[in-house]
Length: 90
Image (cartoon, rainbow, N blue to C red):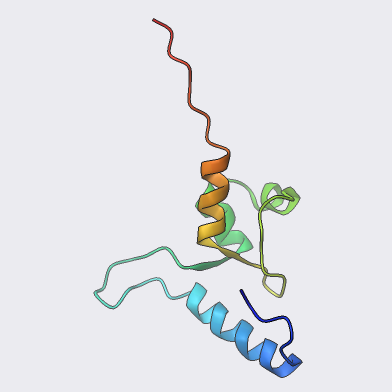
């Protein structure tokens, strides 16, 4: 988690580093990877939902800012929590 007691200039620098990480799509071995942090649009795409749907959700954690950032781990946890296993009738 980001430290809440950071000074404003430190927060800007921190947000910039997180944003750069969010847009690093290619790993060192050349493979495309899902970023650790995603913007609202990227997170909505990752969940295969609309941006407006994602913005209405109150149970998905995000880091507020411009842009808001979502951790991939939080999105994966949300999907696991809302997974429905169908009942099979024989």
